Image (cartoon, rainbow, N blue to C red; front, side):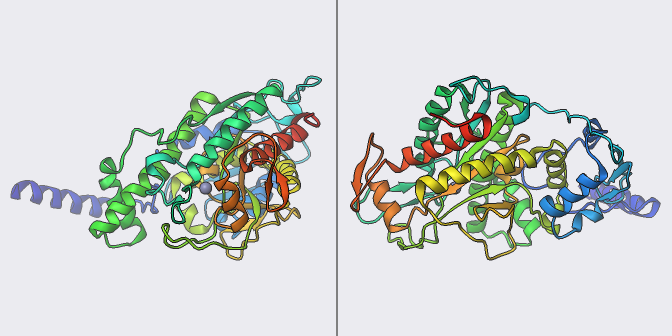
Length: 410
Ligand SMILES: [Zn+2]
């Protein structure tokens, strides 16, 4: 063992003397694949420098730190894969010309032709019911209960909405897939397989790995990172839809899940991909997936579809817009419901994403409606006849997509 260690030491010393290794930034995010940077060349001629720069600065990296990785001239972009590497040369559409359509599996709204009475005919939609639910709801901190009330479990609620939404979209002609059809994970990974990755992840953050932190991080890598990466693989490699609809319910801090705080606050917002920080951009996989989203031309479609769905959700729920008061998100447009934020769950899907965050689950009126469960028709809710919260949500999203893709859904 001693000899081997000595050889290793000598080998390392020699390598340092002969050529200093190129420094690699905190290269990959947990469980990320090594990007294939050469694949970006397929986007040659699909975007002008002006549009590329505008999307980088206004949508994807508003703090300007993209300039450390992408250098733009009127005819080409030099993209640095990692520090010290030769830049990838991407030829751009010359100023004043019409860029070619980027290679992509999804079709944009203008490429579709809806049929009378079937506004979504031929549209391929993946619905992603947020979180896992079931036996994992407590682990993923998406569970609370007051006394002997019906437990509030976001993962189960999003699946109810997803199934209702699927029916509605299919009746309007869409082909629809769910990223999960039951409560629980789709990834075969479990926290027990992820202890080593958890050590690396805590080291990357500069956090000391105590036993409790390691367990917590291994669980987070399972239910959030591994699970979302698995759903993204399903979407990008198998379903290859025109659009992903991510369904969530929002919440305010509820404290102890067995004695949760209820609030009067209730609101709605939708999230578009972008708004990466310089720190996030240091991860090679995040830079790469950001460029794939940008070059694929997803932003304009995300904005259009999210505008329509925000209008229908706001009209159906009467909810006010949520406002971010931190640097995590930036406004997407003058529409106060639309925000741009860098989430794994909107960044990894290579097609446009409509990411919905309506209702605060621990607001009193929403909590009361969740206790009523799903039902047909209308019931008296505090003196007002209302549909079940699940049907209100599903109907509004379906209406918004019908408005955007093909005229009113009636
Ligand atoms: Zn959620």
